[in-house]
Image (cartoon, rainbow, N blue to C red; front, side):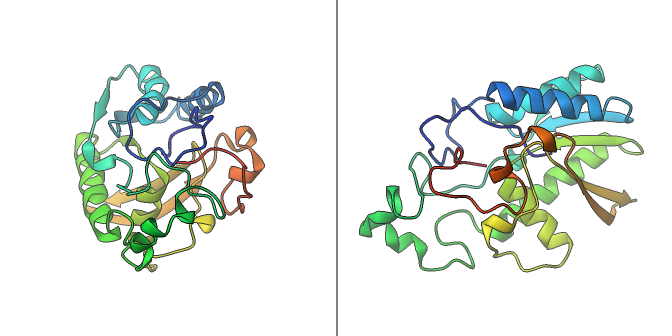
Length: 214
């Protein structure tokens, strides 16, 4: 699961920075998904250590009488621009000193490599599978790591247009296992009606439209 909307009035790329919590709307998104999953056979709930992920996981865990575990492997992708605004035509991308971080979009050169994200996310997914063996687990993470893992599993290239990620706020990307092998991937948006249209999967952001981060 991707976390819900974050309180981010400054519009910064918050990345792994502490202190970014769910907004009121984000808490409503988390509650909606908890309701959606209330009848599922969930035995394990685990989240990234970042506040927004932990807060998203809390109502799901509560509805199943579970505690929220923490796995560093689910954390947001590292990014040299965290703490800055990075919109086209404004913010950090206007400074020539930052252009050196943009030379290789295939790695990407501005942050954690795609393959490193795949490896740590797959390890976290396998650990959750083992913790809930024969039942279901919920892992709460962030847009880019979730999309990167899904792209790898579905044998797509890892570099991509960020605007085309199918990973809306509070969405569920489901990996189904047979034994230790992933046999299918699904995607649902239980809180779609709560997500602002410009932040839905595939929407193209406009300058000044919505908060930054993932």
